[in-house]
Length: 111
Length: 116
Image (tube, rainbow over all chains, first blue to last red; front, top):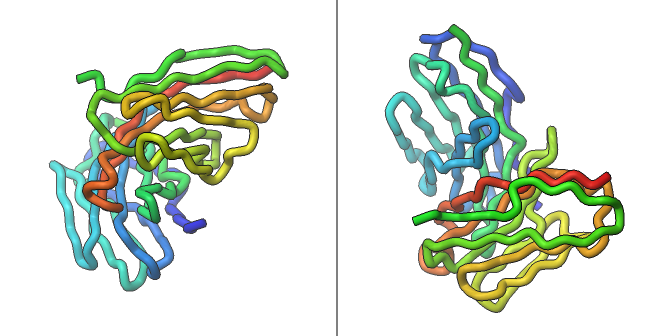
């Protein structure tokens, strides 16, 4: 079983703050890393898939980087807004396209 | 396209009762998955079906069975429900088989199950 760890577990920021959180994973047997955004009472939605060391992906104010050699990925949110409040999950691809999820970072953005 | 649909949205069972959770996808995806989500535990894979006609155990399969009825549908059955199976259940699907391990999973809206 792959061990995917996310930190911090939760985060409170003010509107306009920039923030980032971390996903750590075993660097061997790497296939792909996924980031999902999960709003309360909804289902997880995919943000990014990254496969190559040094990959950077961006969607609006959200971006992610990947370091497969040291086994981590960062998710950045620039100028946080209340609508960014959600749990952010990372997941590692294994065999048969299974994903192993971390427990998530719960972000709360207040006015 | 409806994407991934799940029924029911909510269910309350008594210990020992059985039920089937239904999942269907209209994206012509090869692979389908069942997860449970518990506080502090993240999403844990119960069973998956890499392609039509195949099913495999995930991380927490005990107490569950699955059927991949056809390419569209993947059901999860609780034969004798226990309070420990109180959870939110998510079905997901992905293209897989074409893009290898680089595919994205699309999730249904979830089923909230309470076992008394």
